[in-house]
Length: 125
Length: 136
Image (cartoon, rainbow over all chains, first blue to last red; front, side, top):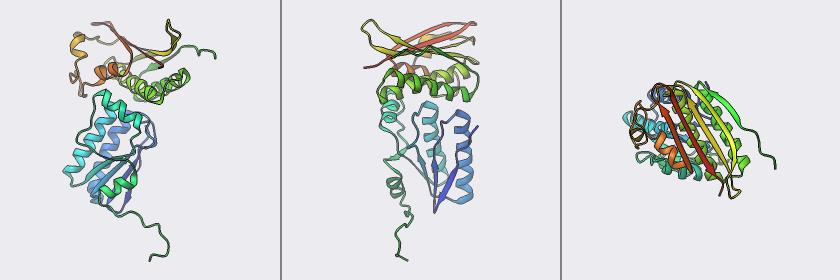
């Protein structure tokens, strides 16, 4: 089973899903993320699904679970980068993910969390 | 263009569910389905493969290319198991009803994502779910 890495950028934990998720990886990610939120005191979680080709009910439920779980630990979750075909399919499947915040891309997601974007501009220091 | 032969795959683990998605992705792409239709079919297959594994105790999938009377291409996928069967099919197809810990969207959701849906089940013998999606 492959594990999904969790990166820390300032106050935000970034999870970029680059693999075809099997159910066990989904469950591990939920647990790893809960641990990491507590350990780092992160205030936000971004789940980047730009590379994810399908979201079925199990994966969709993970988003809702992570959002509720992180809220209980004082962190906000944003799902970013959902492909149009995935959004259409999710709605038809019957999963509207009402309680999950979304943003079109990583940059908008970071802004939504009020997180400082990494300063890439040279000569500003 | 030659039609690829049917492919079969055993479903006995979570990794196999991922393999079913990949198999269906290849078939849907080969049939010339739009990206949205491919995504719908792969998602439906993922739900049904999980059912075969979790509720049917494992089984097999068969993916085949089909052509209808009007010459339209499609992909037909059959999931079969020798599990406990479904005692109440109407209930199992009701949105939100679940026998396990899921959301109850597997069967009802998969049915909405495909063009044809057929369920054969016998208590104590097993279940076969066959779905078809046609290109537009």
